[in-house]
Image (cartoon, rainbow, N blue to C red; front, top):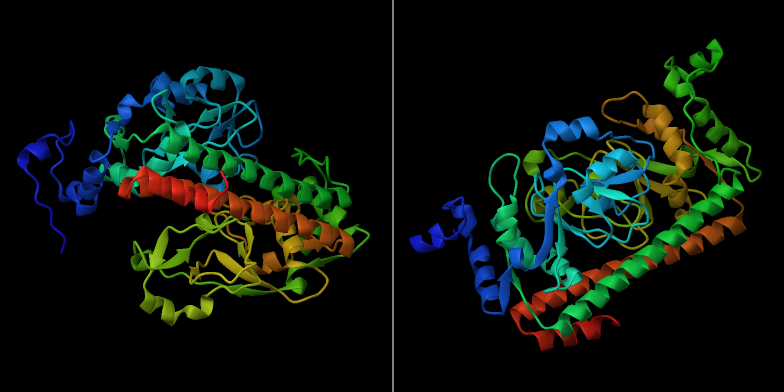
Length: 475
């Protein structure tokens, strides 16, 4: 059992809310504060020029009347937590009109801002990448811009690292849903190191964005090769209000809803089946293994990662929920293996992640399928790209259309049609995907090193942190 002994005067000084719950005084939180206060430091309130949120321009009722959320592109994006976590500001986005964007003037986002979740996964910190179109802050988030007293990238690395997260998590209230308020965020203590280490950390983060951007560009190029081969490079999905289908078509599909027969879906399938290199169904190209659900009662704060759909992206697998070693031993037949493709079928169906290296110990949830290539007609990198492309996404939209909770049945997954590009084109795509993933991993390494350098400076000193960072990355 862990205990903390705290003077009453310390309790009274905690916050305007007069926190005296044991959660606030966890030993790791108290130890973090002691470490920070041994260094030159300041509170966040003195280091920022802006701390705002979605409600800055008025009441929720007024905003609701003036903001029009759309699933199709309009004038501006509205960034949600899910967009930042996926590092994807192009697919499945929410857009708003120019009027709404200008109405939300104080929450305009230009790139480089620090974002803090204020509700739900409260205290989680993100950094907005460079963006190239008008963008507004989403709901349930704080946006922070640093002032001239501290480097913005350095501040992000601290707040998103171990000690910054301890400071923020300490200030999260235990109410449901978990939340953090502005005053609590402003009260966070921040170490103030020299410009030398701040600039070095900032350079590593800038290099992270550079490699991340190049990775996305190369990945986009590989997608364009696929679409160009099928004559779909400039194709756009258009919803038609009226069209005619034969009754025999409904019998064959065993569907009678109009959404299933939208011409845009038929156009995709026809383009694939007309491709000169041929096509095949996914079920003929891969073996399909179902994964397992363990139930939320088995979730732990640490242990073996339990990977859910929300943890899956084409580029990486994140960790959030864990299970025990004992439970893992009982269900270890569901451990993913190198060479497999993890493919989501529920919630957000159509996310494919190729395990090009031996994966760490983990179990994947029932919303994810494990695909194993069983043919020489197609390489894994190309297949993963195709599964993440608009070709498959439109087939998914056709199959799950009208569902409240998206669920793509395994039999529907197996019937998905995949074009078999010529070997030369597949090899070209494969090379680009490999390079994109290399840059993505390098980008992530740069960011993690920048965060770790700040932690070393807190734990030891600036010189040790600078030497370590220079040894890890070229900055």
